[in-house]
Amino acid sequence: MPHAVELQDVSRLYGGFAALRRVSCVFATGGMHALLGDNGAGKSTLLRMAAGLVTPTHGTVRVLGGTPAQNRYRIAYMSHAAMLYDDLTPMENLAYFARLHCSADACAMCHASPEMALRAVGLDPHLKRPVSQLSQGMRQRTSLAAAILADPELLLLDEPFSNMDVNGARELVALLQDFLTWPLTGNAQGARTIILTTHQHDLVRGVANSTTYLRRGSVVPAAERFEAEPAQLEASAA
Ligand SMILES: Nc1ncnc2c1ncn2[C@@H]1O[C@H](COP(=O)(O)OP(=O)(O)OP(=O)(O)O)[C@@H](O)[C@H]1O
Image (cartoon, rainbow, N blue to C red; front, side, top):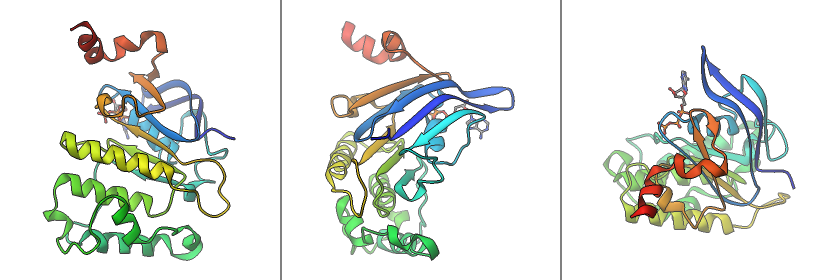
C-alpha cells in the first residue's frame, strides 16, 4: 500500500529563506500522525504541500501513491484560520460547500451529506445561529465538518486545537479517532489517515500513531527529540 504522504529530499525556498530544507519523511497510511515543532519550523508548509497548495522548490512529494493534484478529491485540508461564512449557520455553510464540491466533475465525491458531517462532529444541524455567534470550538467543529464532507481518505489539519479549551480539544481528538474508523466508500482501498500539526503534543500523545518533529525546516532525528521538545524534558525531569 502506498504511503499517505512521502517527501523525498524536499526543499521550499522563499527568496533565500528555506521554509523546508532537504526534508525526507513518510507518513504511513492509516491512523493519526502528529507533526510538531516550534513556530516557523515549517509544519504548515509541509501540510500545505501535501494538500497541493504549495509546490516544492526541489524534491518530490507523493500523496496516496500519486501527485497531490492527481489525488485531490481524496484529500481534505483544514487551515488553522476557519474558512467559513460568518453570516451563515453551520448548515448553510456546509450546504454551500456541498454545492461547490458537487459542481461539474466532482459530484461523485459527496458521500457525506451536510447533515451527516455536522452530526459527526457533534453539532446540531438545526442550529439557527450564524457562525459569527458561535464559540471558537463550534467554529472549529464546523470547519472540520466542511473538511470531512468530501469523505476524504487523507485529512490534513493545521492546528485543529488552536483557541480551544482542553475539554473541547479532547472532544475533538475523540471525534477524529471516530472518523478514522469510518469505512471507506466506493472502490477506495486502504485506510483513513489524519495528519495534524499542533503545539499541544499532550493532546495526541498516546493517540497519534507517529510523531514527526520539525526544527527550522528540517526533520529532527529521533535521537534529538527531547531537545526539540523542551517542555517534555522539563516534565520528565520534575
Ligand atoms: N508564503 C510565504 N512567504 C514567505 N515566507 C513564508 C511563506 N510561508 C511560510 N513562510 C516562512 O516559512 C517558515 C515556516 O512557516 P510555516 O508556516 O510552515 O511554519 P509553522 O511551523 O507552521 O509555524 P507556526 O507554528 O507558527 O504556524 C516561517 O519562517 C514563515 O515565515
